[in-house]
Length: 62
Length: 130
Image: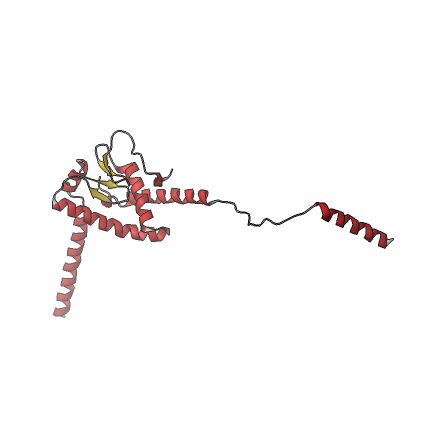
């Protein structure tokens, strides 16, 4: 009985092996977030630059 | 004791002199203000001031002095923000062109052409981002 089950399981596995293939991609999956990060850095720098100008008005005569 | 007093007096005098020099350089001279107002001196996109027209040697020297002091302050800021000096300076340039240059005053874009600000906001260089 147990042998029959094992044989059946083996048959199913080998059948599956024949039709489903999961293959790892050759290149790593890359998600590019650089644009967002860069934009955040620019916005933060601009805010700090404004603050710096306001705190050092003698360096920025008008 | 007498020598000690003399030394401390000298120190005091030196401190006052340095303080006075610092105070004097922190003020914008009327000549520089006039040169900015008339468009002979203006802000540059690189974060420094420049001479567009003809100015006196004195005003030119003041612009150079100002830029030296800006560079020193920029160096600290760039380090604390973890960016290159040039990047911090250019960010300052974006903000001065955007907020501080007044109509009738001169400004220099990265293309090397001096322009005079009109009623409209300055078209900022692409590097200034959004």
